Length: 409
Image (cartoon, rainbow, N blue to C red; front, side, top):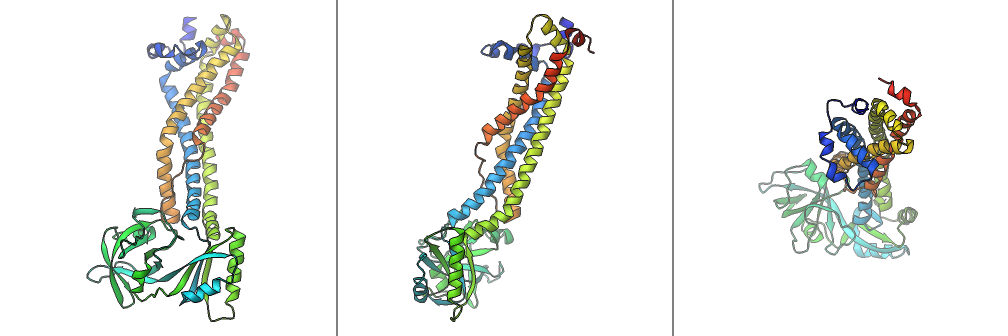
């Protein structure tokens, strides 16, 4: 009987398992037997748990990165509370724009901005950037509150402060918050301080106080860029409002260069991200399947090697249910060990992947957000894999007669 029970790990003894004796007292008998059995084969247990941990970690990472991509879409709603951005081919008097928009009952409020092209130069006049789209932002603006990466957003207390998008710092790495530059528009120039870098999807942009842009020849009494807030914020309401606005100027001297609804902007971002999210989900499933196969193979090999042990347990009166519980407990402990490692590793891995994906796709890192309920989901999945993986080999072993099991080699 002793030879049969020690056959699988004849050279290891149970020194490691004996160290767990005091810690195992709170556990039921069958679970204590399972843990002591695992302690006799530490290398195999760690290998099996590592394979499952890798699969669960990639599974959690895929879900977390997908959630982070959706957080980026939510950020558009949060940072752009207006509904329509309307750009004209020329700057028109703000009062005329106000009168025009008052004719539309679905327009609740608007802000008049200015848009032009400027470039940043050093103190000696050498250009540091190419001409980039520049927005003159009203001091009391509430229509755009971007997420700041470095420094701060525009502040009335810093009238010479300007802000650039991350696309600008990516293209011109020499730009750094706190540095002073010369902002040029045509033949006019003014000294400014770069006070912040913001997250902004698309081409490099610069944001400056409207009063500062006035000194560069962009009068505040006229505007060529309007941010409109509607009474309804749906895609349908925005599309209808854009059509009505464009139709109203067909027979006038006004020309609309472009119009974009924020819900449409979200759809554009979603179009880029949805397919990637599906791909990540598929990758998560494949990784989890590989981890499950690794655990299943380890459990199967372990059961086959212990046929004699199972036979002895049956010979001394062990019930099939109790024997199955021992093996199921071993599988659960290995699965929980792997899931625990994955839970520790996944947040770090998820942030790194989310940053990389965001930088490649939209030129700035995704706003990291862990998928809702991902930790209990990982534990549940690992436990389910463990139970399913041990069902077939254990049932096969229990169906063998004692004589057949003892004769196995």
